[in-house]
Length: 294
Image 1 (spheres, rainbow, N blue to C red):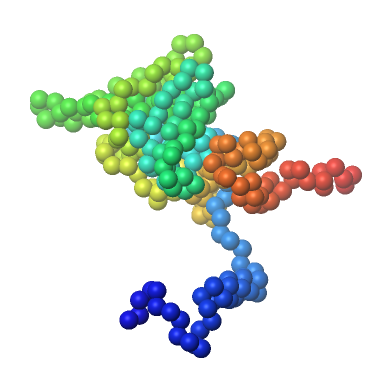
Image 2: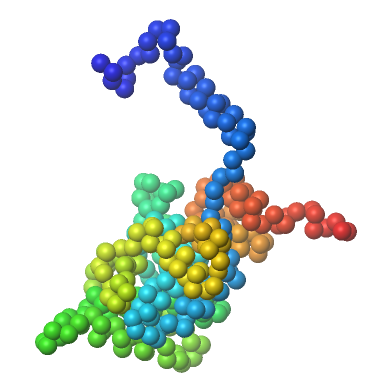
């Protein structure tokens, strides 16, 4: 009685296929009548990203703020460069990262929204021209801290072994690097546990917890860093983890990229899915209005 597969009572309801169509048309009519605009996150463009990274860089060598600073810089740069979703960032493990001499950083995304079968996709984060926005360097420095925390042991006198392991790494990371300044040419530390998460919860004392960040924590990182950069609350309210992915797509269109090239990094399967970003955030790209003699 009342099971999901019970037949429709005769004469009471239209067939299910018709019901579905009726619901679809009704909802469509409501949307047309009220004209509700879908709520979307504002994109973080490259200039925005640099504005957020500036104050972060001032904390790199300090304790304990330097630990969270290194994590947040790596998180935002990797999220932007890979056009990654929050879930893709928070599920990354140390074994998913590989440095390559030519390509920079290879990142294995084991599962995503468009890959529910878990076939996996390798995305590349190339070495940056600017050291401040070099994603492989930012990730390398963060992984060095993770490795120091994972291999730390308590001291015989009971002092915090993790703090003693992290502080020398922080100090070393702010020293000038010989050559072109890139640290991403050296191999990543061999992880103590390849299945351990990359982006982890950081306590205000600088301690790294073994558990991964959640999606809401990614939103909070961006909001907190935007506030530190002096952005107004009404602008911060429009930001979130998706702002990194949206920013990459928008910058891709503004740089003259075609949908196929952008989709190589985003993982979209249909160019039509990118049209919203072009229409709302890059309205002048390919628009004849720029050729008018106004």
